[in-house]
Length: 265
Image 1 (cartoon, rainbow, N blue to C red):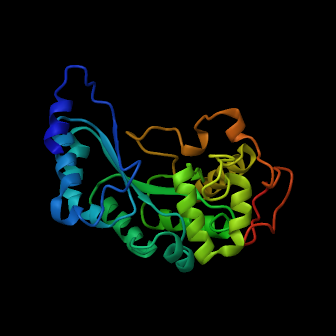
Image 2 (cartoon, one colour):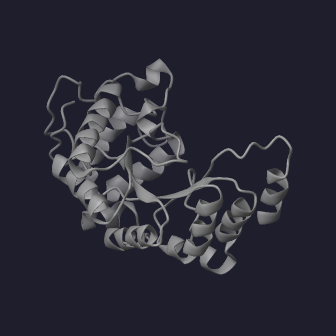
């Protein structure tokens, strides 16, 4: 893979745009420990002076501090440590096989202390599971306490295949949440109702996060990261509207979500 990447980077048409590593799936899968494909690609990007960012839930990224330092010095680099909650029960249920939140925060601190720009990706924010003001503040405060330079957040967005897997997970661990999520996004195996969170909810999340970042001195993102958080992405109007069954923006919601949701919806 690194050889293919090297050939692509040598194209005359390549303008050294920022490469985002890990936006579709985590680049630090367990097998990365053996095959070092991500490390090889980061080294190749450094060779070509191409800036890059990495997004990961894994702590193996600290192994590549030396490569990231070189990449940052030559072109610019940044690491987004993905962290959606500090609550142990939610983490165990929704992110099996990933390092505990405290270990990710240690990885963040290690990167920062090594001079690698790093921040937190608080995405997706999950209605009724991770969006309580206290839960959001805990993540933002932990990010600041561990040296994060930035934090960005995005509301939940689900394609049909992801939706079916996620609803199966909810059915096992948070069954009371299945009905509300199905009313918003559609039932497993059925037609899609929406792919994006309603605009009113997404905007409320961003306002809350913005207030917390101001309080704790965190930026939105750090160069060379693009400055367009997931919640700001455009989509078809019918997918961004409030679907039937979703709490209206003029309501304060307790039920129908499994936990108290105090953001204004």
